[in-house]
Length: 84
Image (tube, rainbow, N blue to C red; front, side, top):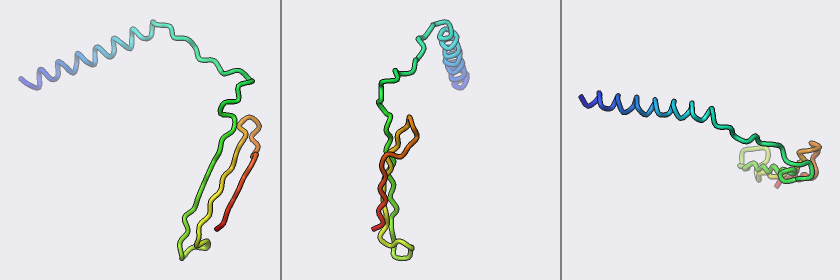
């Protein structure tokens, strides 16, 4: 008896979700356009890294560094690698 009520509620929820999905397909949404060429937000990306050292590795003190990329040209603008 209890599982019958649970199944009925679950089927109603699923039917409601299908109905909402159908209604959503008839509502027009605005298209997303790319930003202007002059907008350079997010053009430069920075990648940092570090490696922990230990007494049994080839580099016991570890190392770290960074790279700065220009995402429009694909060039590396700046880099630094440090072996401690």
